[in-house]
Structures are given as structure tokens and as C-alpha cells.
Image (cartoon, rainbow, N blue to C red; front, top):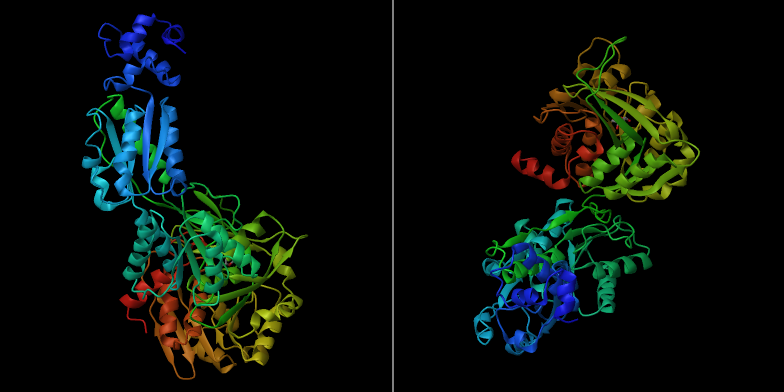
Length: 635
Ligand code: RIB
């Protein structure tokens, strides 16, 4: 390629090309100049040797100078490379292991005639000294992960914030024992550990010996094996390669993600990585974007297109996969839930229509529900050790419901898929005041027969509580209550308005939790709630706990007859508040708390659940509830 070829491609004379590349282009239009430069860059044309020494001309080369190994920077390099290529530059990569070699590497780049150097700052380096011999006009930009250096750089990503975000995500779901896995001698490892420590410190969690820095995948896998013998409930990985090692060891040991362990990784991938099953939850640290931004800024400087922009900051972003859930190794004993699972079709309208009325809905949502699934998810989100027994159809709805259980940390070994039936559905009309009316189609729930419970007796091993709602075949309700009574497992039973529970079954119930309408079905008549609760209590259950919506709840037990006020929250959708209440009650009781604080805890769980649409997505997690426990001095 010579100057004539360039001239032909640009449709100008060789003299014009010469003027442009030698900056003697006053007489040439901007458009022609741009066209010539584009082709010069594209073909990486170097007219003659002298040009390389001439600072005012360009070579079409840019330098990328990195500390440490190129492997650690692969995403960053890809971003820089893409930015250089997009502008027609070729990139020369130089890695510098020792700071004392910096000047030597820079010199190599100058001698190559690069138009500018984009470098990465991972520590305080005296670049002024290193650049002392560089041509004055050589353009330079930098990127960094160091907060203290961000001001001097074109681009900055807070890697420690990414790690903190990942650790906080786990903490919010109830994890306290989080193992950190990182690479030894990696330029980001210091930030990784710093972000992790910050998160633990902010949440008053004592750092244990849980930071493992590895030098190879084999080393990672050895550590993972050791960690599985200890207390940890979650792995925080420096990158997807480490996460892959964790997945591999856990699967080899028959341990499930996220049921047995949660896994979260720092990553530069904006979308889920297909190789992970279940999808890996990640915090995107945007290293690629960082490399790209620093290179773009360099090229802007080289081409004199405006002054250097302000430091571009890349904040980390959380990608929720399916590899993180509340820890099952929670504080309490096992809670088994036997009950229905529905896809809720929630239809919002101004008011619940009366007979013959035709109404328009402003919003229709499809969300996972069903009393059994709701109670299990409610318990698991609060850190309860929740197992569920129930039936789903082999359809898309069934898959969504199953995922919701898994993602929220419910053990699903007791879930049976009934391929020939559809998943149960509940059509829920919600008025503007949050009150709701439900029509159900049982579908696969009809198959929740005593045999299914019998086949899953393993789930009851070491169980303290069994939550049962009568929204399933009555034979199964009876079977589950009788089974628990013989095994000494306490039952929390939610009756529906369709069922009058006979005395021989009432006597075996530990906690009966009707709402006002359900109480009326059990004890019809004009007596007060207190009188009806007493009557019901005298028929057998050890505790009768009547939920009263915005009036709170009323407990009648052997030692206590007491009203509890409701938590004061604005209702958007009251559906499932009873399920939230029961799930939370079981969790707090299973942790050894007394009934009074457990009811207070459950009251806030129910209150929070009505503030959002649907049931399962609206159920509160542990951290939120604990804020209320502190604020209202529960227990
Ligand atoms: O308690 C609320 C639940 O009742 C809804 O999720 C719906 O599925 C119905 O079963």
C-alpha cells in the first residue's frame, strides 16, 4: 500500500493525502480530510520512516499498557480492542510485571510510534517520571479500580463496590457465613477482600476465617471441598471460572444450588452465562466497558475531538440468576408445608363487581401463589428451614412455580409433577382498597392425596412444624394432621371457608389460624370473636389465633387471651396476608421464640406482604423484618 493507493481509495490526489498526513491541510475541506484519515487508519498506512519520529503525524497505533498478567485483564483488553478497532486503530499490548520496568515498556511503545497510550492504574505509580522521555504530544489516558486514583483517570470501576453488593445480596437473604473465593496475585483481589469486609462490618457480622485465595482451579476445588464441611452457606466468587469450580464440586457431592449452597460471582458478563445450571447470579463489574471507555477517551485525545471528558464511573449491577436463595441451614428446625400451589391471575379493578356488573381491569398479573407454596416461600425468605409437599402440572405455570420455590430456598424434594393435569389456578379480583375475592381451579392440586404425603415422609425427619391449609383434598388434611400428631410434630392449620373441621381432628391441632370469616364457618352465630375463639379452643386445638385484617389478631390459648394490633401498612393487595403470617409465625417459633414475639413478628410479615402486588413476590425477607423487630422491640 503506497500513497497512490490511499489517494485512489479516497478519490483524491496523492498530494492531498500527503498534506493531510503531514498536517499541512489548511486548504483541504474537513470532509476530505476526515475521509483521507479514515482510510489511512483503516489500512494502517505509514508513509515514510520520518513520519514515525514526527510527533505531529499519527501512526494508527495505540498502546495498551497493563500491570500484571494479560489473563487477568482479558475482558478489559477486549473492550479496549473493540474501541480501537471501531476507530480504525491497531492496538499494541504491553504488560508490565514490575514497576521498575515501566519506563522500558513505555519506551518500547514510543519506538513503535504509537499515537497514544492507555494504561491501567492499580496502584500509585509515578507516571510523570516514566513519561519523562516520551514525546510531549503523546496522548495518554488511564483507567483504574482505585477510588483514590479515580480523579486522575478517564474511567473508573469500583470493584470493591461490586464485591460489597454481592455480599450484601447474600446477607439480605439471611446468609451470615459467606466463603469468599478469589485468586492469589490478581490485580483486583485486594478490592475483592475489602468490599467483602465492608459488607460484613456494616451488617455487624464477625469476619471468620472464610477468605480463600487460590492459585489454580484445582486449588479452588480443594478449598470448596473443605468449605462444605464447615458452617458456610454461600460462596462469593471472584469470577465465573471460580464459580464453575464451585458448581462442579457441589454437584459431585450431590449438593444442590441454591438449596444447599448459594453461589454468587463477580463477572463481566452482562447476560447470564449459558453454561451454568441453575443460572449464576452475578454482579457485573463492567471491566470490558472500562477498557472501552479509557480507549475511547484516548482516541478522542489523539484526534483532538474536544477536551477530555470527566471521569466515567462504572457502577456494578446485580444480575439475578437462580443460584442464590435464603440459607436452609437457618436458625430454626425444619418446617414442612403440605398444601396447594397455584398460578395466581390477579385482576386489579376499582371494586369487586356485584352480580350482573361488567367492569374493566386496569392491570392483570400472573404471579406464583397457592396457600402451601406461599407459606413455604414466606418461611424460606425469612430464613426458615422450609420443605414443601404439593403437586404441580407439567406445564409452563408449573415450571414458573417450581422456580419460585427453588429461588426462594424452599426444599422441593416433596413436589410432584402431574403431567396429565394443568397447574392449579386462582383468579383473584383485587379492588382499589386491596381487598380480594378468589376463584380457584384445582388442577394438579387434586392429586395431592395422602399417598403423596406418605411417599415424602423423609421430609418430616427432624421437623418441628407442619403447616397445613385445607385448600387440598380433605383426606390429605386428615392424614397429615394425624401423621404429625403421632410423630409429635406441631401443626399450624389454616382452615378455608369450605371446611368445617370435626372435633376429632381439631383436638390434634397445635395452632388453628382462621380469619374472621373462617371462624364464622367453624363457629356460626352472633357471638363475639373472643367468645367464638374460646368455643373453638374448648373443642380441641391448643391455640386458636384469629387473624382480623387491619384489626390485628386475637390469641386464645391455655395461658393467654390477648389482642395484638396490626402493623400499620398501606394495603395494595391483601391476598396471602394469612399465608405470610403463618410462614413467619412458624419461623420465629421454630427458632425458639415465645408465642407473643412470634405473633408480633408474624404481624409485621403479614403487614409488609400487603404493600405489594401478588403473594410470593410480596413476601418480606429476613433483613426487612429484622429492621421492624428492632424498631418495635419484638422479643
Ligand atoms: O392465600 C392466598 C392464596 O389463596 C392465593 O395465592 C391463591 O392461590 C389462593 O390459593
